[in-house]
Length: 371
Ligand SMILES: NC(=O)c1ccc[n+]([C@@H]2O[C@H](COP(=O)([O-])OP(=O)(O)OC[C@H]3O[C@@H](n4cnc5c(N)ncnc54)[C@H](O)[C@@H]3O)[C@@H](O)[C@H]2O)c1
Picture 1 (cartoon, helix red, strand yellow):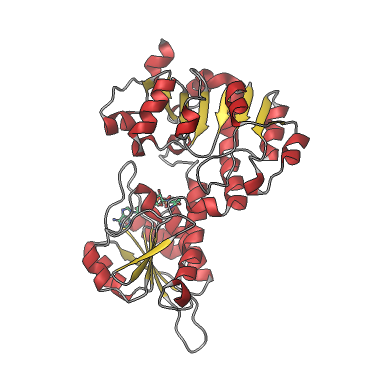
Picture 2 (tube, helix red, strand yellow; picture 1 turned 90 degrees about the vertical axis):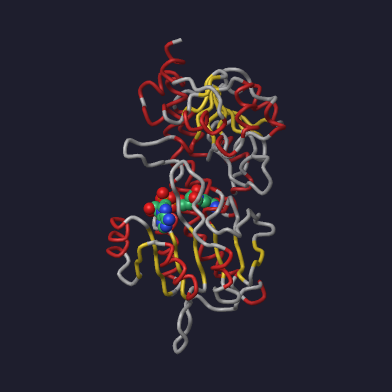
């Protein structure tokens, strides 16, 4: 199979869908890998590093799409890429279809086989291709928050760890899943006074076990309101699978917060958990509402591509290899995790939640496979 890897064209997206090690594995399995020149530079990977492992480097975006049987990407195709996609071409990337009717309809028209990273799902309901990016975003959250709570950046001007004789900053993390746990680890390492809230008592028990110095609390509207008043930094890290993020912090709660406190709303990619959150970019990451700084970057891992590219491809490569080795039909028949990743096939929407989100016809994958 010819596997194509284009350069990402989304603004400030520096990740790439394959590393030299991934090229090595695909070539060893008998596949050809066609990569657009410069695709890896944002992640510190040169064309020569790919070439040494057997990749063919091509000059244009178009050539990658023309030649590949399967495209590996990081972000969803953007409008200039729509016309480059061919019927039956397998595209393995983050799509997040439910967030865009335009993208969904465009991909249905192109009749591609869309395998979405975000819906590849293991038997226990975990999402293996989302976890590494949550780990990155979680670890970045206190780091970014610490920077933007500095006075010259508009924050109150407090050092997370304090110093002997001066207490540390109070960090409240709401949502103790992958993002929250990783945020806690870094905030603790920086010396902050950390509280984590969740609605799941089992999760709180686990967190209290692994982080004895962290305070845990049940997430209720009352507890949230009381704790945000005390917090210097609030990290919002909740997720309700398949739904928009719940609004846990209202504008009137902000008015009771400390002047110059910061909210890092990691859940902004699901709509955000503060009423006042709106997406920002790495170029212009913060704004202030009611005296509280908001950091709401929707693609946090994009800022650290030298970590994120490797973290992402570590987990995508085994699935990419399986798709390439077996062809998509056999791969999804033999691996239910991959089957759950299939969102559309030849113009049929095979992922129920996306069909429901836009009131479009749904065709079960098994029906498409039988036809
Ligand atoms: N901005 C970015 O760049 C970026 C990157 C990665 C992930 N994310 C987002 O971060 C969020 C968290 O992701 P995750 O991987 O940690 O999810 P997760 O499923 O591992 O954890 C979510 C946690 O939220 C808890 N929760 C649900 N409702 C709650 C409530 N009302 N109060 C407190 N806790 C509640 C759940 O019990 C769970 O423990 C998601 O919205 C995800 O899309 C954003």
